[in-house]
Image (cartoon, rainbow, N blue to C red):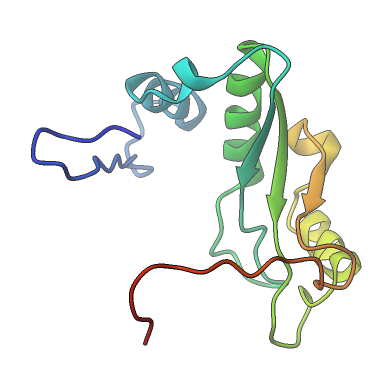
Length: 138
């Protein structure tokens, strides 16, 4: 992550409405502007945190954009995979099986994105570790 002179993290945006540039090449240019590529190591496993969307919803990053990131990571010799966790609320992301089906319905699978998908908190969403955080919460 890049941090400016004022100590604040830089945030980058892509305007998907511009027609004069290809979104996938714009993703690569954006990644080149960050230090992301410099941090990748040959043979290193790289988790790409995603939200694969809800069933019937279109408010998520498109699989083609995820594939552009996967290819960027792979060209640098690293081993990318996509990941997310299940949800605490009921629905089609409650278990890894439901979530993987939902991901596939929304176009996220090995053939489309070019990398495996691993649900990080296990089959039933119970594989987790509690971590203490500094300060007060709430």
